Length: 123
Image 1 (cartoon, helix red, strand yellow):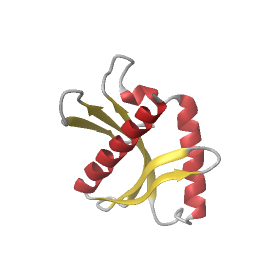
Image 2 (tube, helix red, strand yellow):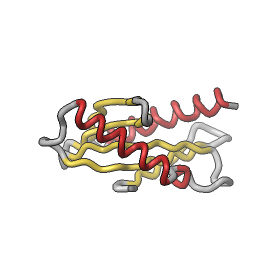
Image 3 (cartoon, one colour):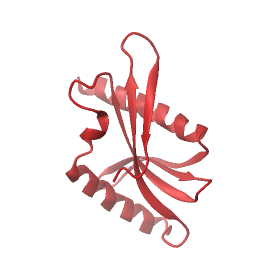
Image 4 (tube, helix red, strand yellow):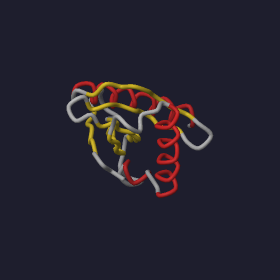
């Protein structure tokens, strides 16, 4: 089951990355990992000069709630701390504004169709 979840997550991240690129974002990092947490995507919105730390949640069904509901308070705290580390490590604090987004990827069991819900400033 875990391998299946990892492949769904990776597939969802690929779809989310392509979606961001289609909106004019440049992906600057993917799966940034530190001791605190992992950040799925880090992208810069070239129109607004915002760096977006993106959590991607993919689901085939909403029977356990919407994907964004899986971003708990504990997860938010970890992502924020990891983002602070990323900003300091890459010396980005003077040049950009920052925000935290969630991308929900809804997959379809029957075919290759999917839909994406991009939630800006999610937390």
